[in-house]
Amino acid sequence: MIELQVKERRRRTLSFRRTGVSAECQVADESYVPRVVLKPDAAKKRIAAALEKNALFKGLDKEQINTVIDAVEEEKHKAGDVIIKQGESGLYFYLLEAGACEVWLSMHNARNPQMVKIYGPGDSFGELALLYDAPRAATIKASTDCILWTMDRSTFRTILMASTRKKRNLYEDYLQNVPLLKTLDKYERSAIADVLEPEYFVAGKEIITEGTPGDKFYFLEEGTAEARTRGAVVMKYGKGDYFGELALLNDEPRSATVLAVTDCKVVSINSDSFKRLLGKLEDILQRKKTEYAAATASTS
Ligand code: CMP
Image (cartoon, rainbow, N blue to C red):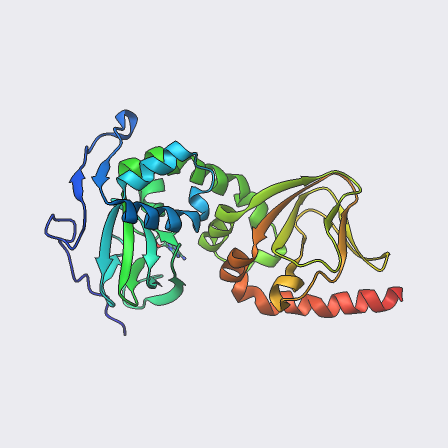
């Protein structure tokens, strides 16, 4: 049995290992006054670099990014520290700049936690309690020494809450009905929703071109498409189908052209997010290769 201990119960006191001087204004979300934690330019650059790696900050404009850079506060943890404890209330959202953190989930009782995920640089966590005013849904433990940037509840709710909720709600039903993702839990699907980028293709346009390098994986959200190799149709796609996985899985050029048959809306995932979020589905994805080989053989 793994004992998860909160080592620093009073970690939110001023004596905690932090840098920067807080000129915090704790206010209600409606009357948000931007929080400014003074920090050197070098720290601002590090935060900007960490934000760039994280999909939740993608849609923010320059002013919002600067608000975030001003508001966050550095927090350092030693390997083994518990940063968030499942069941407790939550005040902060965390962006991991350096190090690794484990996610532990206690399903039915607190005695049997399972490690379900490891976060690395650029990942973030702690959003659920702030989004839904709920207790912490998992325990997060530093597996190495870590540097984190913490964002207070008011800043999170003012800057990130609406866009994060909107994206998760928008794709919740769609992703729930994608057969490939059936074995993932709700939280894993919402992590996918966070990184989806919509793209539109008119009928007749190539979404993927055979022989070119591949950097994205696609789900078809609306319309129909087909895959062709050497001009022959080898696969037809409808809503909920996916394509573009082979080049990313096997580091090889695109093995077919995928063409929009009708006007299409696709949502894509970049190569890094694909490996991070869909890595555990690799077996299912690789099995598809046999299907492609059979379809290609039957056309030649
Ligand atoms: P929160 O509930 O605020 O605090 C714990 C965090 O763990 C949670 O937000 C998520 O950011 C993160 N987490 C990672 N994996 C899971 C999971 N499978 N279920 C719930 N939370 C998870």
